[in-house]
Image (cartoon, rainbow, N blue to C red; front, side, top):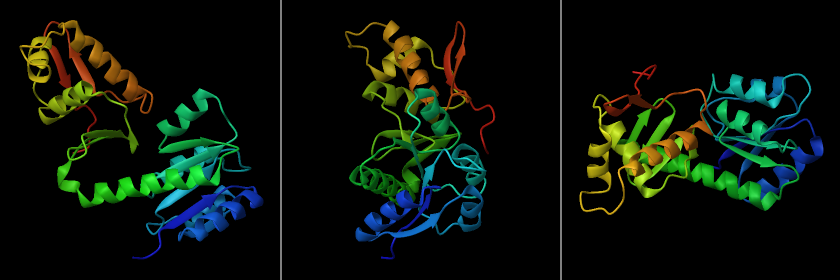
Length: 232
């Protein structure tokens, strides 16, 4: 099996070289770019994952990420000294898959890289078991939901609701019907649990993809999967 190629983009040469040396010890092929302009010349379909700094001269990491997403869809792991929650949310919402704050351990970085590449491999090998809509993908084998490549921390019931709505995109489900299909008629839970679960689903999706609508409320009727702007 050929080595997986990692592109590290950071204007700090010492950080680049340190990451390169460590990852090459673990059988990765690593290329370095010290600016956004240099990185754009190196990005192609052969790159398996990109490690990307945010604060760089010229084209910064956020802008570069947007440009990268027009070319390739490989995982992007941000590494940044920025620790504010809004920076992380922005980075993930524009196409990043992960975010590590500096200083970070090389061991953790490698673990994140390994995880994303395993996920990509699983998704490629199990495409027929995937449901996709806009930026949401459901892995039906693993019972996991991803938004922009990032795993969403859904409970079992939240997962079942999303799967039910995605499998029946043109169907409006009342709260009663969702409750019956997901919890069962003999459940001791209350009907309001459906409303609360959908609220939590929206909140978890919004943390990664704040600009896209997924579950539509039809007042007095129930809920349906929003197919507006969905790629055909």
